[in-house]
Amino acid sequence: MDRKFIFVVGGVSSSLGKGTFAASLGTVLKSRGFKVSLQKLDPYLNVDPGTMNPYQHGEVFVTDDGAETDLDLGQYERFIDENLGKVNNLTTGQLYQGIIAKERTGDFLGSTIQIVPHITDAIKASIKGAAETQNAEILIVEVGGTIGDIEGMPFLEAVRQLRRELGHQNTYVSMLTLLPHLAATGELKTKPTQHAVKELRSYGVQPDMIGCRADFPIASELFKKIALFCDVAEDHVIDLPTVQSIYDIPVNLKRARVDDIVLSNLGLTPRKSDLAEWTAMVAKIHAKKEKLPIALVGKYVQLHDAYISVTEALKSAGIHHEVDIEVHWINSEDLEKGIVPLDALGEVSGIVVPIGFGARGTEGKIMAARFAREHKVPYLGLCFGLQLATIEFARNVVGLKGANSTEIDPNTPHPVVDIMEEQKKIATKGATMRLGAYAAVIRKGTKTYAAYQTERVYERHRHRYEVNNAYRDQFERAGLIASGVNPDLDLVEIIELRDHPWFIATQFHPEYRSRPNRPHPLFRDFVGAAIHYQKGAAMKEKTAAQQRIL
Ligand code: GLN
Image 1 (tube, protein in one colour):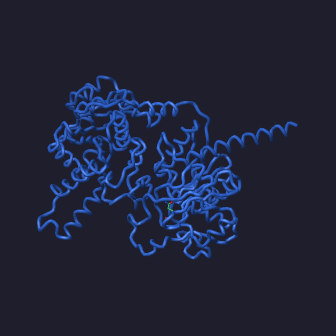
Image 2 (cartoon, rainbow, N blue to C red):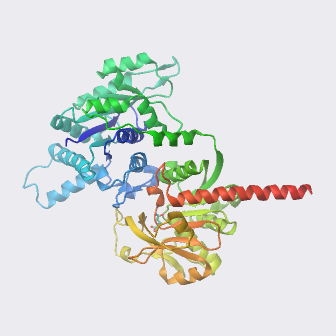
Image 3 (cartoon, protein in one colour):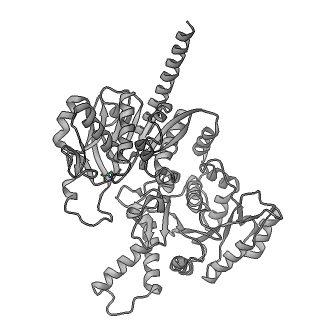
């Protein structure tokens, strides 16, 4: 079988939505009956984004096989509904690390190591390897950065070489571009696109398709102009308007017949055409729904991308229950300092405490967990959200004064959350956490079991600390139950409160496995509980109002 490769590059500006376009292309091509996978090429020198500040990079996405990757991989998984892995994300850092390690062991037999051919060969090997590992008939490869970036050059050179090797019938290049708007004349301009294409051609790569992004509707003459100047067929210049929901994009691509265009260029005959389930989901997204306010209490709330899998998982649960999730972003430090009053949590129907590292802002998150427990507000804790809820319970229910995690207070008298045994000897930071999918056995009769309906689950982890088993019995007697336990390592993976309508927290990240049309069971039931809570709160208010009248 000849595998097919589609490259997605970006010109003129960053942040045009290349990742979403690539993922959406994946959705429509999969809907035509092909096995599709996606790969992201990141030109930065970090080996992976695992050590980057969320404000620099947004969320770190984690795959089943434990890779810490760009958040685009989460987008890909959500759009094509396939599990990806290490092979699906390549960085310049990884390339250099691999090649320099080989050089040190003498593998190059004295030759000079150069960007061409050594780095470009490694890029090509990674692209082909990703397609083979994922057994993809079509691999969509997103080249990060913008055409013209110095660090992106080796990737574009590898694209050129691959086209030469595999032929145009097996490769396809889509370029996204921006048409800027000049307010003075009220026009959209194509010149930057022409220049970006010229720049791409200077690497020996001619785009087959140009996807146009603009803040205003694009007149049809402009598509013709771009086609003429950039040497692309007229029907291969595509309008990519800004949409209300990113999940609209596959539907729009289908409407523009992008799937037909790409497939016929690659010499592929579609096997079916079925986007019905996706289209039905999009219709549900746009249907008018009741609002459901959910608080997300974190440290990086100014950058919503830092929690993108969490909000997408919440939204998908909202689609399932036909409610509109309205995220209330609460900065945990503001809560801690009283800048945001605790009462803000009284306005929401559910509280999420997500991923986090380090001491700053933790007391605010602990206050949120306490509020949820005491006011019976549904609570979903995700990793740090489990650890902090445990600390809160230890302090305020069990009565262990000063209980903490050794990550936050190394001298705590009650280290109820402590570093994992195998983590103690690790001194380096990159890719050294407990990462990737591990099993958890779910205790029957719990709300956790009611959600999963199965005894064994696999979920993705990214942490160094765990609940200290020395306190487990004490917690259990006081009503904090280990509803999911790792069968091999005997670690607490899920907790829930016995005397609470819905208070569940996980040591792993269920958000990474949630899909837009298949919400993760814990997110689904959390939102279900929040709806129930909202109804109860409305009823209470009504009764109180009636009593006031009487
Ligand atoms: N900082 C905590 C740990 O390393 C929690 C990490 C997380 O939220 N993923 O264990």
